[in-house]
Image (cartoon, rainbow, N blue to C red; front, side, top):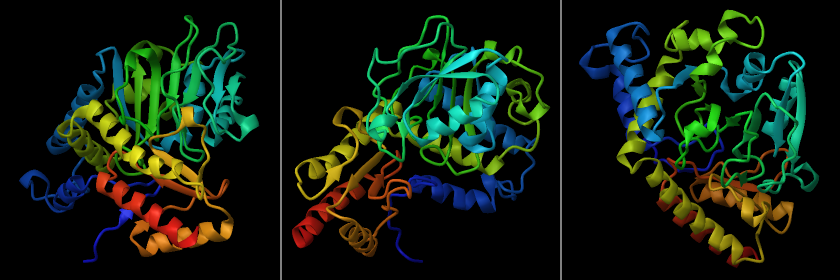
Length: 362
């Protein structure tokens, strides 16, 4: 079996190696049951324990109060782009959105199908290279909710803290690419959603944290599967859930708990990003693309002197055991995605590669 390389993919992304090793055994025979996790009934006792532990550990990590429900859904964040307004934005009502990149734009487009959208702040005029600062948003009078994307994978920007929110409203967050990478006060939100494939598990599973009062009555008559209340009332098992994804997320939650919880993840992620940013900042060969006060700890985006050099960089990096560094097709350049499970030693090795490549090609 070949050696594993350092995987900088933006998603599906690197998973903790201890989790992968546990999953390898669970695929064959979970908990001595003689049956693999992929084969177990989602209503059997083995899976009861899997999902109950996943919910409990998810709650423990962020101190989620009983007034919120933990849901495991399908369809990724892209389904949440329309499921949120379908449930929470009544006809004729207005929702406020902060436009900080491609994923915000997709969410805005879907919300317009259900009600009015007011863009309260945007960084589009400067190619999404920054996060609007506190006080810069201009909210509508009584928004149904305020939606933002906490981390922008394509442009390498990240909110340092939650944006302001009118007292009559609540925050909705697409946290797909930085969920559980740092401490979070869930009570500041009405709803948080995240595709699992960056920090929590495999693609195909979506985490939704929703305040219980928002389940009471959807904004319109919806198909059964589109109602958050359907999934809350059935403990995420109205239909067959993404069982393997939930199992893996549960193991990732335990891995985070064993590594210092969210405070430990924050310290780990800050140190990893610093190792790379320090090299980029000291260089005249590389240029970071995000404004200094908006830089992401999850996705480090940068350019080289020209596209030919960038192509050589990506090729040479792959040969040296660094995979997934090509920037998003819409912006080009390079992108090092260093989510929770990306190992610190990989950042240190990559920092040295950056120095060596510049010395040879600068």
